[in-house]
Image (cartoon, rainbow, N blue to C red; front, side, top):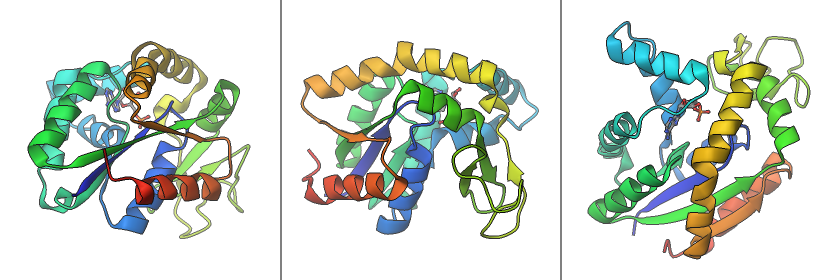
Length: 219
Ligand code: AMP
């Protein structure tokens, strides 16, 4: 049965990094709702402006908009064998939609949580820099590039997300505690959640996630 791989975690927990590695390993597309919304926010339309404003404030974009995004993206042919959700679901309503979707698409779901302490999250987010070309993620405190502001891999400039400033980060973490953290209990209670320590080095977290995926029957 084809799989939906779900990685749940606070902003800065490493969802993006791990989803990318898993995507390379299994050939499933990485669906980052944050990336899709950032792209939509560039359009100078009422919808684009609304999304941009919400993201800048550190709040969550509405479940209705997310439903459209996720239905449209997961209906693409490249999702047929399976896909990785990076940043979805983030509310209980989104979790319910995902359950319906998995049933309709006849896919099993693997839920994994990457847990990281709050002090680490703050440092990871405010120090994060991303390669504009290949998407490689650096951190000015924890994993600086060899040359400041330049990607080690392809020499492209590194970008700093506009919502990775201390004020937006505090709001995003607050939004996470309020809206997304309850999802962890929801999945935990139903016995479907596998938890991985996100403080471990990237490669070790990756190995653990891989082991979960390979041992799961997807239920
Ligand atoms: P991310 O790149 O995953 O950190 O997401 C950046 C921002 O996009 C979040 O702070 C939200 O404003 C928005 N966003 C991403 N995914 C979702 C989602 N599943 N539900 C609501 N808002 C989202």
